[in-house]
Length: 288
Image (cartoon, rainbow, N blue to C red; front, side, top):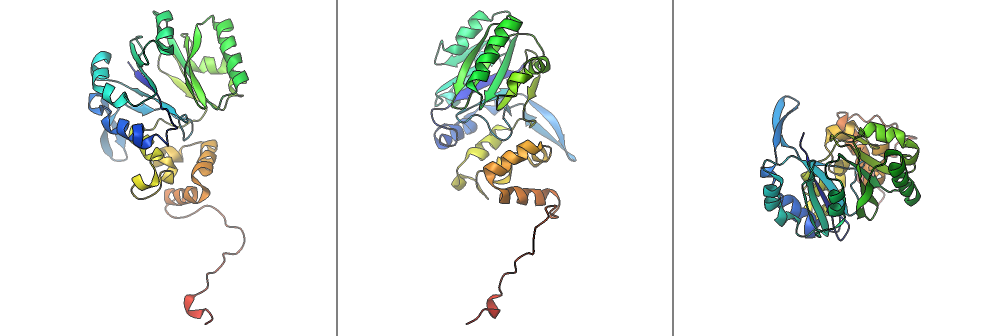
């Protein structure tokens, strides 16, 4: 699979940048120039594009995101179509697995790494809510153990992206440094072959689901932005780990979570209610 990655960072948090950049980006992103595939959902065969938004549980970074996709044309041709949709980002880079890239601002951290990494495999480590000490130790161990050139290439308010010249499988990298990754909030490791391991076992979401999760309540038809699993598909939510569902409860509130659970079980709630259910006073029997 010849994947291309788009790394984007906003000046404000994603939720505050919704109208200024996110909504405009989603609507103007050239999805017609992205490869599609056939997917079976229930008894229907749907055409789905190859765009995947990486996420940690139910969230991306506070002020940025990464998407993976397969362009129909060459990278330079695709960038020509995509450039207008990237203009309002604070920093961005589009790069493929062959080492071709374009970034803004020009000659920033991505270009510095790619100039040193020509001819080598590239692994990526996405960190969120990371501990500064754990990150420094991880960078030190990567250089000492793998003799690999590694460097942070993009910083977010609550995390960073690390590139390293390495052909190790993602699972081996995780197991080798598991004692360090345990001290880091959430992480995703993508090896040079495109395979990835995640601390939060949730599938990638689509651009439209990302926009829906970040949109203000007035812009979402039929509910608030955080309603119904923050825009995640029902099938993805049902397969989520308990830790992810706890995160959902923290973010969107237990009432929304319980409504989603009742909907997924056909209206039969499995939650036991403690104590008697208080009866509401009938309006006709109220004292006058």
